[in-house]
Length: 95
Image (cartoon, rainbow, N blue to C red; front, side):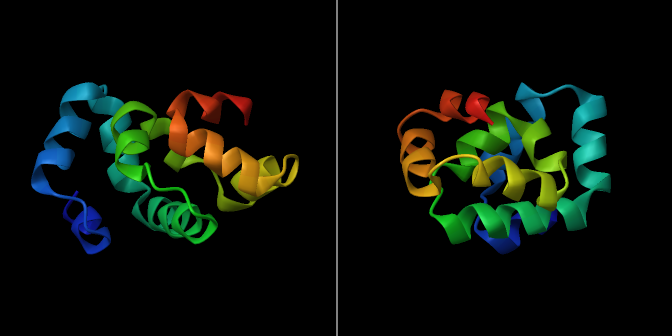
């Protein structure tokens, strides 16, 4: 998961991702590197600040197609939803 370091994700966070998630999910995550990178870039572009927490506790979110994620956000006021997610990552369940 060294590709996460390009996004400023530390070794400690990578370790926590590996410990908090099933090995099969982590393997799928690694195999979907391009998709994951695009999703991280999108989340940053809309102002999500809790990407590390999402990586640890909601890793499966990053395996979705970017178009699917964008359309999910389009169903809401993006600014408001981003604020809710930044305050509590469980708000991502609205998607």
